[in-house]
Length: 306
Image (tube, rainbow, N blue to C red; front, side, top):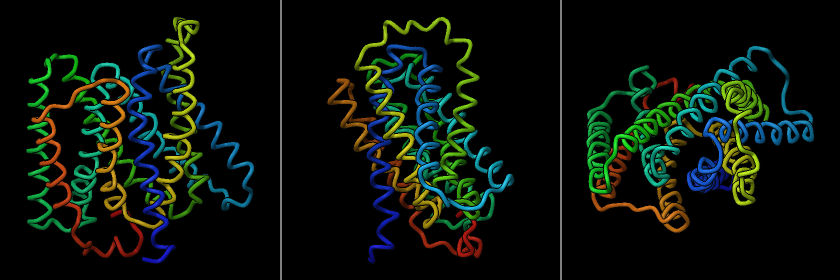
């Protein structure tokens, strides 16, 4: 594999390591401030970082209101909607649950959307893989009952499923955005639109937030989230999407549970049962079966989202 072909996968590998760390840092932050405020600060800070990066790098492509609207719409899905659900979920359920549910179900749902919209062929292998993936998810949720099942945790995990759906939709819509925009400008536009929505949603909570109670550790985690798992990770993900299909990009999400679980267990002391592990393995097997088949639809070859 040439360096040129390997670069997108290097971007994806770094992105998945950063995404895995985000679950632990986010859990720390929602323990010290309202989850809506945490989401707004994370992406507000990331948007500022990305704007500065864009200004320091002139010549990032021609300006187009149509491209800006497309990128903004993608941001409302992958930044605003995703993080409204994500920070709400992580305030209710363990970070380790999210580090498995979101990255494992994202490629399953991406493939499902691609099949429904005709971007990929509905073969027996793909359909069977999706069925296995869903079965694994059911086993994973059943495993929650062995670790002190509560309605709150179940709601949190269901919200994580919503996050996976948002990320799948974001990956598909972003591919079309990147046909006309530089990755940095596209990332900045998407993050800016999503951050604006998050700030407006968090506005009612700002006066009641006890800023003095936020520890130095909390602020450090917030800064890390804004720069690492957000500004840099989203930029690297967009750069990779420029060269690979959404299905290929989201299948690398299978690396996130490794990082996310390790961070959650080591730094937060969270548990992961054998039943949950079995469910995750089944879901990963099904997802790999569904997505590791060569695309046969012409739209994939032409650069349309796969």
